[in-house]
Image 1 (cartoon, one colour):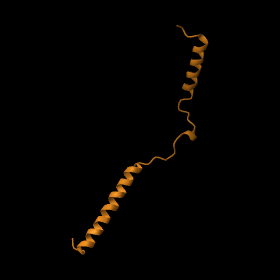
Image 2 (cartoon, one colour):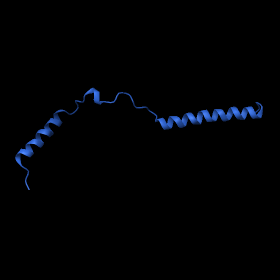
Image 3 (cartoon, one colour):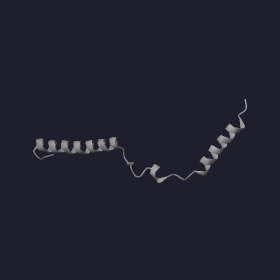
Image 4 (cartoon, one colour):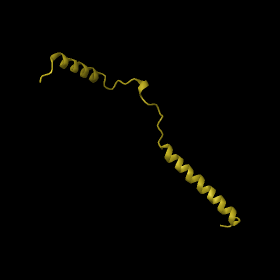
Amino acid sequence: MTTSRRLAERKVEKFDKNIKKRGLVAETTTKKGNSYPVGPVLLGFFVFVVIGSSLFQIIRTATTGGMA
């Protein structure tokens, strides 16, 4: 099975167009600072632990009368 010359030329032209466009990406397709260094789940867990431990400490202090 051989590929027709016309089909081969089309593939070569398409390949050449892609090679020439390499590195020329429009600014609208690039992401602009929407990524966070920490994921929302990890941030939520951190806030839960910090607020939960502070509430636990307040309750413990209140029940012991201020004496740890």
